[in-house]
Image 1: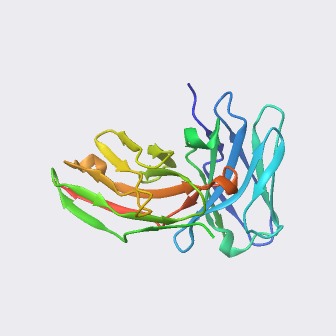
Image 2: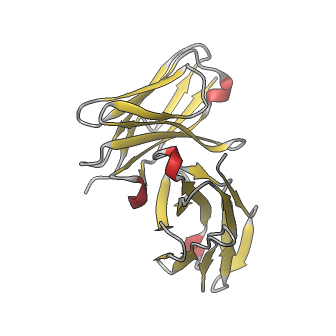
Length: 112
Length: 113
């Protein structure tokens, strides 16, 4: 079966711009989570959506937002980009936490 | 808060050597524990998991046992291969944290032929 698909794979944006990243979970998975990975901070939880509702949110500023659609596809948006937002953004989907998460290949965002 | 501590890398081994990557955690209640692996340029792959004390997760020759008394989940493999070279992440999901994963800092493994 198809895995978690993230688009685009690479993005280059300028400071102050906004960006939208997309994630298509595995069919049947209703939980979608987003993580930011950087060399300095490691893997940090952004937020989790389940059935179009945000269930959990990490410690990130309000510039980071997300949503989930009725088909479980999810998007995350970062507004007013800063250089420090350069990172690999990973999406993961799951049936439930005890099954483990399946991660996508990520979107590498570079802010210049 | 919840946290995961892993041994710092890189860990460099020769092919067929024994591997241990240490992982300890701090969490309330009884978290589920995971090991994920990340190959260059890719996302994370679930390697193995354990959901209760004394459970042993295993996959592809890798093993880890959930030790509640020592709050540990060390990853082991009896004979590593060059293809095992990657970054390994220990993670937990606590009962009171919904579906959020808390990750350790990752351990880079380099296996030389």
